[in-house]
Length: 502
Image (cartoon, rainbow, N blue to C red; front, side, top):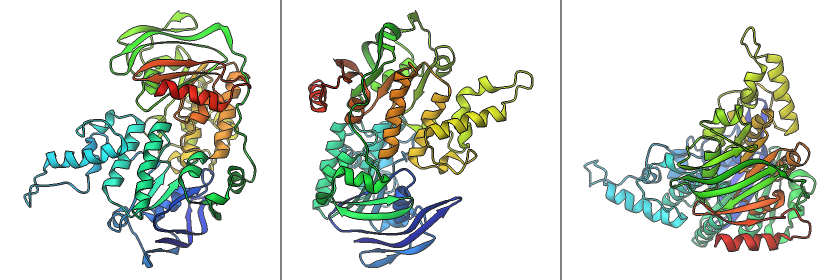
């Protein structure tokens, strides 16, 4: 159905695609995998006309394609759900879904909002987006915005659907619901190109997998004839370990952060917990369960309606994110790096050092020390293996995974005592994911930091955490301790979590 032949694409300082040839058949789910910067997102943006290739040919149903815009690909039945959230924040969910297919009263040009909302609701129900269609999209979490994008793609009735990290902010439950939708589309003959860093999803859902590395096509294999280790080797030339990282030396005699009966109407319902020195405390639950909502209260982004927060044993009065950082040394890596975590137009060094400017400013000239800024930024780029052409490169030109590393690095540069990390490996490849997991673990084990890990990736939260709190309907409904005990199996922990979530 869809074929790319010898596609080349370059950006300033980067060869994104190097003589890449791909073929996707009707009624198949075809995974496209590779490390950050391997060329996956570039390939699907070329297919949808967002980018134009420097050379090479593309064919759809035997006919040559020369898309000059995304609108042209939509007209041919090719649509994309992008890794980065692409919504109009001040419009309703229905308006976002129906933007290019508004229903009017005959030829009057007057929009029939009742009909628009009814059609949008049908697709919202398909993806499990349980809100009134008139809800303003800005109010949704990153995960719910992602579901809205999926509903919009389904409404387009595409024959080729390209999904770039569609489950990055979804819990296991929401992801499985999405997989059933994709299987139904496959039965109807839709071609699905599935970009994901989650191997368990690739092996569960897909028929074939193509691996890209450094802009080149390494090969295409049938999933049935492939193991996870073989796939990792194709991607990065080595194997990765998925066992728990080891036991942490949690000091339960030193309380670092405590929440007592925290209430925020509609977001947190009588939540209490304690975080100790050297601990990685996992927050797990379905989308909208209250994990991120609680994090935003802890950092002062949302105000308390009741309850108290204590930092190092003393009652805290956190009125803003600045308060949380500069008064209480609390950092927060947001789940939504594009809208909240990064200055995309700014260079890499600015994003990394923005949290430490007040520490490197010259007290006489009031100017930021350029030498110190570059030194700190360079240190973080090296520590996190951020792929960049230089510290001056605009952050928007990095791959999604490398943007995520920059988002994490700015809080590491600030040397926070308490670090809340929300979906740390969204859009991150298997090699970088392993590196970030090790980095989080080292912060607790070696540097005695206290961390809260919020993740919808069940294997991730079990692998990294020492204790897990399970959230449901804005409350903590369960606690699992001793996660880092080597005698506890993954199945044992995941089954216990499942009982709480059900």
